[in-house]
Amino acid sequence: METEAMSEPDLRSAYAGALWAYIAAESEDELARGRELGKLSLQAGLDSSDIAVAHHEALRAGEPPDDLAGDLLDERASRFLIEALRPFSVARHRLEQMSQELAKMNDTLIERTKELEVANAELETFSYSISHDLRTSLQAVLGFAQTLAARHSENLPPEARRCIELIIKGARSMNELVDDLLSLAQASRLPLELESVDLDLLTREAIGELAPQLAASNVDLVIGELPIVDADRVLLRRVFVNLISNAIKFSRGAEPQARVEIGMSRPSKEPIVFVRDNGVGFDMSQSGRLFQAFERLHGRGDFEGTGVGLALVARIVARHGGRIWAESEPGKGAAFYITLAGEGADAAPSQGECTVGRKRKKTESDRQSPQSRPNGARAR
Figure: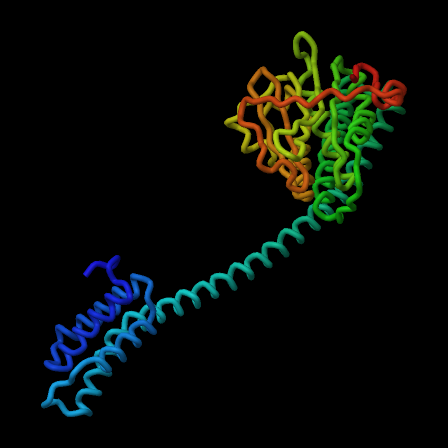
């Protein structure tokens, strides 16, 4: 009998025949047939109540043999019913075992998750404390080295002056790394203070913060239309500072001119904000390392930096419930896309596509804002 054919009427008919055949002859073959009927019923989606109904209807409708005592009939009927229900008992037992195992696994997972949360919290606290203490020591080293160079440089031999310069350079580099590590720790420790943030104004604040870098660059800076979002203003400004700073840095020397564009696209209902440059770009096969701390896709001697900036950006975006991804080709620039709180979550452009936001019309305040016109940059 095929599993697909085991409907409830089929069960009742087959059960009645097997039941009375067993009652009449007490055959082990008929008893095995009862177990098989139970198994097929279970596979067909029927339950134990269907077996019970079939059993009672078969007893009520059938004619017992004349030479069979009533108590013997009841005994054989009960034994046949028990065998027919055995597959359901086994399945229920297995289900109970699986439920118990799943509950144990779930408890273990909860316990491990709590342990991981505690370990991460302790690690962040440790990193923050070490970074804070290390910065104090570095500032002392840097201060004494600078004082030594300023007051006694003329009395020192050339080799000593060179060593002091190396100390100052190394201390500054290490201090920058410590500052980035502290920012990375704070991005996870500090509570979010959400407010309505105009990304156009925030971008111009970030550009103002980057005035020294822009003053040393010849970059064509384009600010397109940008949305208003709910976010932590301080943390989100760090996102734009880091992304724009990277775009300026990696587009240095681009021909015919370095170009950085900040804007948004709307491939779906919600906007996707992007920061795009025409710089050196990178190989997308290496993109998995892009947002990991201390990972660098370019040589340390080619571009300055600590390798923490994009990890910080990714952590801040994740805390806002958003996503960040990048697209690039070597020698053809890079584009970084972000969404916040699930905005545009299903609208990530495919590799190689570029989506450009509309240029925002300049206002009188734009033309007068000193932050939007840092030296060395042309914002449009």
